[in-house]
Image (cartoon, rainbow, N blue to C red; front, side):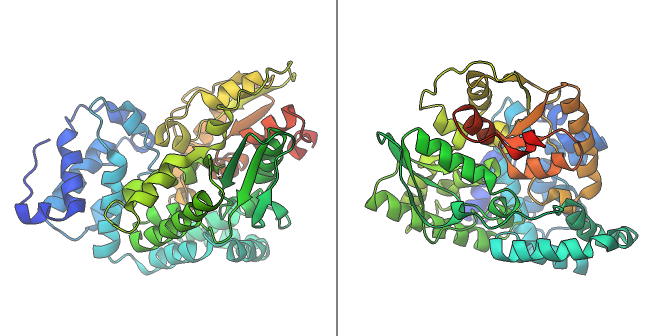
Amino acid sequence: MQTSFTPEQLADPHVAESEKILRKCVHCGFCTATCPTYVTLGNELDSPRGRIYLIKDMLENSRPAEREVVTHIDRCLSCLACTTTCPSGVDYMHLVDHARAHIEQTYKRPFMDRLTRNLLAAVLPYPGRFRLALHLARIARPFAGLLAKFPALKPLQSMLDLAPASIPVVSASARPGERAAEGEKRGRVAILTGCAQPVLDPGINEATLRLLARLGVEVVVPRGEGCCGSLVHHMGREAEALAAARRNVDVWTQEMENGGLDAVIITASGCGTTIKDYGHMLRLDPAYADKAARVSALAKDITEYLATLDLPQKQSQGLTVAYHSACSMQHGQKITMAPKQLLKAAGFTVRDPAEGHLCCGSAGTYNIMQPEISGKLKARKVKNIEATKADVIATGNIGCITQIATGTQMPILHTVELLDWAYGGPKPARLSA
């Protein structure tokens, strides 16, 4: 793609990076075939190629974001299926990240949109606040139908619809400290506690800690870590995202220097994609660039790490698993085979749903901010998963678990919960119900 940025514009390193990305696009349109919003809406401007044109025009002309541009960028799930498909290697992720930051700086959103986004940014990254919000949601749920009558309030209705009927008790798995390995020590890792996941489903990290301990891996939950920053990052709130990244980089760097780390384990693939990008996010910060790159290099999805431990082959569990590969796993981190191979080695029969490359519609807060498109994608995903006739669904991202669970009666678990059970842990409660 030909560009016409001025030397003055290219002096901005963010613009210079976007210019390089734009020049790689050859207008081929392969991305349109795998883009969930284009497949759903059929609008060229809701495809990666269409959004690239809008971003190019906005940045080249140094224009504040306009409503049309914001509408189509907001509809992007950041699923990154386009990057998997693109034969030219267009780095769409960092281009749309730049566009969202530009939108945040130059566009004044309608009042209710600003209010909703501020609410999400103030609540979701903080487990205590999030837990309180879920308790309040249980009280407010009877009024969800009233909110649906007002388009501007639909995101609030979506929040109530997604809120769980019961909230798990606070888990000891989130408490800072070291968890000793059982038997001979084979490694030492840190684990990201996360923000939403320990509130919605603490059993995921509990299963991870049990399994790693039995495999001889010492796990540390560092004091001071927090949200990875992905939620505000995808809102274009870069100052907040970089502050979250710096905090975690400091915490994990201290652990590297004090006790050594073989990996930073992440059990939510959406978080993993962001943490693996810390090196890029902080590349312009001389105080953090090298440290962030080290952290990104150590970041591993739990299945990615388990694949290095040579787990033994188990006899058949007599259970068929439909494996849903989260977009942040298959497109963001390019992890496609490890989770399925681990499940097969653990004795499960694994089936791949049709259209596995398409997003389920969760995408962070997308199912709140874009409920209609998200609902269509969820229905399509659930139909394909149920067609496998599997006994249980496995995936590696809490957002996908929450989203898909609202559309089917099939039990859905994190992959590590099934692996923990297969290798000596308790049977997941959802399978006993």
